[in-house]
Amino acid sequence: MENRTFKHRELLKENDLKTSDIPDKLLQQRIRGFDELLEDYEHTVDEDREQMQNQLIGLDLELEEDLYELYDEQLDNNDDVEEEVPKKVELKVEKTEKKPLIVPTKPINKDEAILEKLVKNGYSSINRVNLRKLGFEGVLEDNRHHVGKYILTKAAFNYTFKYHIAINPNL
Image (cartoon, rainbow, N blue to C red; front, side, top):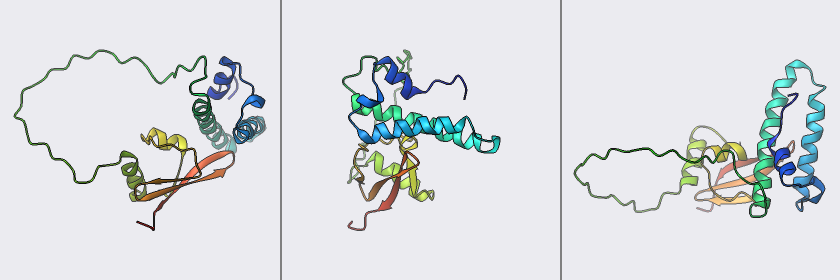
């Protein structure tokens, strides 16, 4: 991991932000924890190195996302690398017969569908980065989130957050 640049550090540097100036004390603590973990990484043995590297990469992505959420409107250089300008694509439209539109009786919640699929596949917890990668769009700031018939509960593990998924017993 020598010579590796971390996204949350780049974001702080590009916007002249210091860890001590961040108003969220928990986020400050997590960034300091990242620095400690990175220092420990330099002294790990080969068999633990890959696991710790994966943990650092995941934590870096979470910290970057948290910083974007915290400073969303205020950042000078908040161009997201992942947001590229889509290329123009010419579509060929074939004429087909119009079929009647089937309107579901209950609106489908995309986030609830994601959680349902995770539960059906045996998952009881997931970290924020992977949840976002799956397309989850809900707000994840509070410690407890109700999403349809599911409840997401935030829990801290080694400076990272995992969300435990449970079915709401009140429904």
